[in-house]
Image (tube, rainbow, N blue to C red; front, side, top):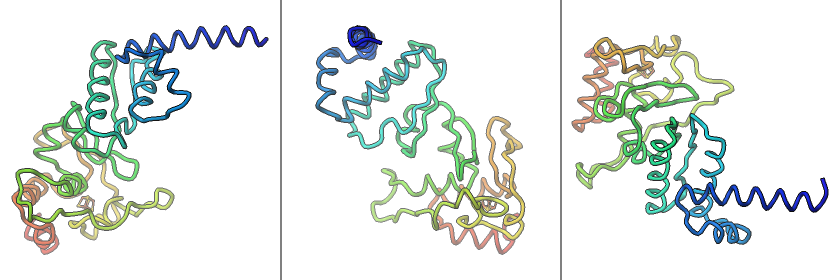
Length: 237
Ligand code: SF4
């Protein structure tokens, strides 16, 4: 390809990219492209990356940590943009994030993953109000809440994430789970629907009624160690 042809291609694709970026709401797109030569601000690049992602009209968009390291104002703009594009382009979005605030705001259904596998799946309301997996409980208990006392300590999930090359035997979460029993170190639980809600699935060997009771106790402020004693000591089945 000659230098002249390359220059023409660059001009054409710059025009196409400018249109796409205008379409997602950056009005001064030409200025944006000019600035990109000199600046790599996340607030500028985020929408541009989204424009690149939708350039081929996908039916499914994977947004992997789209708001990481952004201030809350830009974060809100990016989430609004994704929601608007989802609706206007009739596109499904899978949002991958560790930010439970973002999850609560923009999702319909939630898959909680641990060690590369889904351990709980349900609609948003059930995950936040009636979670059934100990890892989900750990996530929810480790974030600050406005409806709790400021003196109440956050409860971190003990231990470290497992090796994915040599994962633990049985339930992958067992080395960090307060409710582990001997059988859980040998049996790998399947993702199974709850008896009373087939749309809600969890991969845990405790009976669903036991999990419901444990979550009620945890969410009313009981420390995990006390509930654990009931499980391990046989107080709960
Ligand atoms: S199967 Fe056992 S170790 Fe695994 S999450 Fe359930 S209670 Fe914890």
